[in-house]
Image (cartoon, rainbow, N blue to C red; front, top):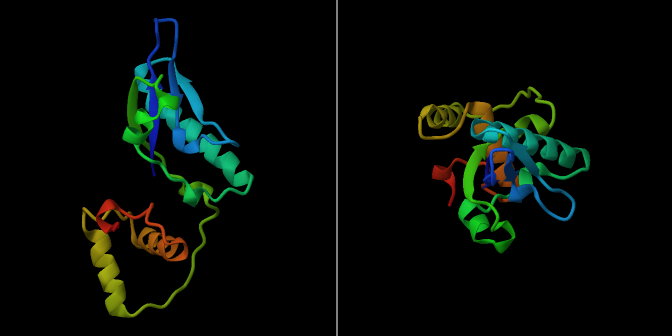
Length: 154
């Protein structure tokens, strides 16, 4: 999932880059971090996101329902006016959803062939057959398309 990260530029060389992830900031959680060097920003943001998401899971929050409004929305919000720059950081939250389990399912061979053909398309955004089926299951269970590749939304 892509997360918008607001970056507060340091005022001098003795200060760090301030980082905030608005999608993970609410009444119960706040996702902030800092990076001493510009090339550490994405790494530090990713670490903070994983730590907060892990805590959310421990408290029973369904992290598959997290929504990121996008950097343009957050940049226009006066609450984040201190952020000089915005970037997107891709973080795989699937490891926090629980232990992967192997299942045995039966599908018609033509349907399986269609799934495999879709997954093989470079523009599909699916990692493999399991990812395709997990995205489809989430969509069906929640009616949401947040994990679906952009070409499949709509």
